[in-house]
Length: 627
Image (cartoon, rainbow, N blue to C red):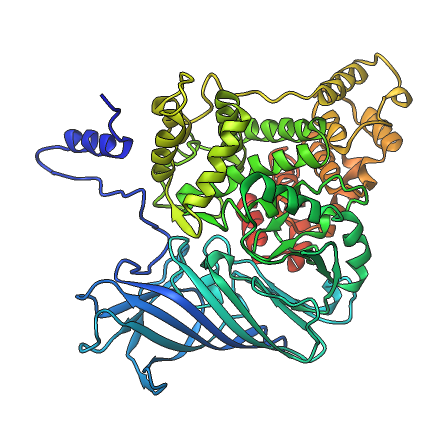
């Protein structure tokens, strides 16, 4: 007998447990997006047309958004859109002839996480099967959670301002009124007006030969979810990397970026060989100022990238492999809700490790797998058990911070488990077919499970069935048979840290000359807990950790500095926290200062002095950690 679907099983248990007096029923639906107000079962957006002015003086976007929406429910006469801090001047119904008629609208109750629903009333005589064209005249707020407006002094050149967006997870609604859920995919076009000396780029068909002039037009013909809407405006220029790839950056960063990311074209070609044709035309990178909150954002056709990757030795380019891999896992096949985020991030983490293995070597890929595994184990100590599943219950909280790295690292480990169980060739064939089957669609974890069961578990008898897979998807922690990544080079670095900590050899004898940056990180993470501040100072003087150009080495070192209260390096720690704005790099350092029991007030002081250069998402995350 086939195993009962877990969702139906859970519902049955809940119904049986209900008291006959209360008759309470848990109505949780894992396929429902609890972070969107939009009534996308009644109306669904098919196309978006933006017409916006970029005003740096007021830190606002102003103009219109026209939504082409299809009516799905003949009984529905209201459209509900997601907004956050948007000023709506008018809403109009556009007829087939192009005439506009005003519609009544109102805002619903504001929610701290989800923003404010915009409820639009439609005429009662509207035909059921036709599309509805809505034009909303609006402006954004300077406090938009998606947009960061940087003054010239916070850019590389120091002469021109720069603005960029970050729409994931639910921040597109703070710069466009729309159905802000990954379950809805739209095509879009945009006309953008800027100061004449600046260039605008979007997650659309950027032309490397576009002349500056202050007026730009974009089209995205493939349907994408709203979190992949992206825009940036600044003094940015283009340099090619290959036939289909290139770099946008401020001129001061362009040469370093071209060197660092020179392998991007090779990554693209190899990814196509492994997982099928690249569906998006060009693949370009935009290197942003240090305040960009993430390592990268997989905006289609134009990944946004942090300058903290510019280490000068191409040691951190796995982030590029990650963002490129999203062109298949995430952009092509998208998680239906944020509860299913592992389908985007876990699968992408698996794919980027495979790309790194082919482009560089297995040793380097294994080093990165081990470091990812270590971070997963640390997160499993912090994250509540109910959120440790790959597909947890998710109807409350904030999708920006609900699982830490679990949907990345545990998801990657799950797919590594499937690869090892069924063989690399068979699993590659499965993934290529999966991307083809669900191209330009959104799916849930349950739909993935059904497809996996029908196309791999039942096809090849390897002793792994739905029960084992469901343990990964729905249970906390790691299954007993989860793979444990290994790296000979990282093992040697750990042994060196232990031996040096014991005093087995002098600091000058540490065999670090041939280490990769990943081995150095592992060495730092493996230092004995009881080292004196004098020995830490000696180590820093010999290996230059406090002055490293490699942001990941700096991250590992300054976490240790804060945890151990190595105050001799606090000046450099503060400089590090002012140099970078990427949440992964700085949030753990602030947290370590708070948790060492002595430096919470120092952490707050450093934060107050630095936060004006942080993105709103990072600012909010650090503020929460300091509470």
